[in-house]
Image (cartoon, rainbow, N blue to C red):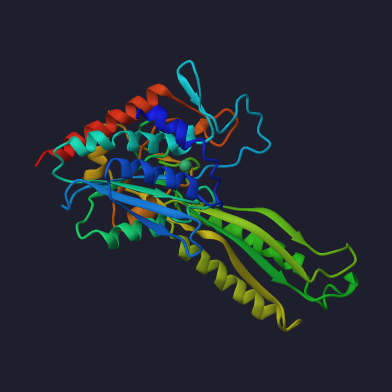
Length: 384
Ligand SMILES: [Zn+2]
């Protein structure tokens, strides 16, 4: 089957982030079985979401992982001109939800199976397919660890096939997302100095977070490979209190920070925590039950910072046909694979500008370039 034919099957499964990906995984299993490729499933606890990985080629160190996610973002409320879950070829483009992000890459991987099986691979190729990437890279670290623990040999690196117009991308920011819950006392608003108002306290914390960001920038924590070139800290949602004349007993706000590789995400959070404990201590003199707690909204996504001199970067430059590297502004599983011991590069077909929107498409030319990259990869891995 051609990449386009396979893509038409993959996009027909409307597996949204957070939903069961079994339908699309079952189809991939059927395809691999037809080609006698043994694979391993890594299910979640409930068994309704599954990562899949497999190896084609010998159990020898130095293989390359091709990684992608099986889920897509919703289409609700988007003005599509076509059915988003039916692949529509128009001119030199293929329209469907996931065509670009990132079932086009998965289709190229699967279409290459016969070619990879026929190649005289001296080092193997691995496929690594995840779920729930679109709601916070929830299975990337599980999948990367499963691959590390499953195979006796050690892969040399990973290519994460997110849309980059086939340019090797060596950096991404990390992401942390929290809800902070502030619990104050209650009473008449005139007693503001006798009570602890949660809205007032939350406001202080929000200002602290913004000043933390500004302080990092002032201290020279910038990295011009990224745009913006600093760690961003942002509060995007807040709710608290019940009326202007009532002391607010609760206020909660959602915030995220996207850290450049230079800034340690855990350190930023620890600083904030220290500050919160100080506020607690201070305000408990007025209201002993005053509290500030944090709930992570999704698991941390670590940044990616693969040095130019890493062999995987050289390899992807050679096989992708693009010799200049860059960084991406979106979240991806690359940092998770890198942390598991697989130096990673993000490189795949399509333009991220076409992802997550109505009339998402991938250019047929991009699928051709991705297929060519995998052919080149097979060639590289066939040399001793
Ligand atoms: Zn993606």
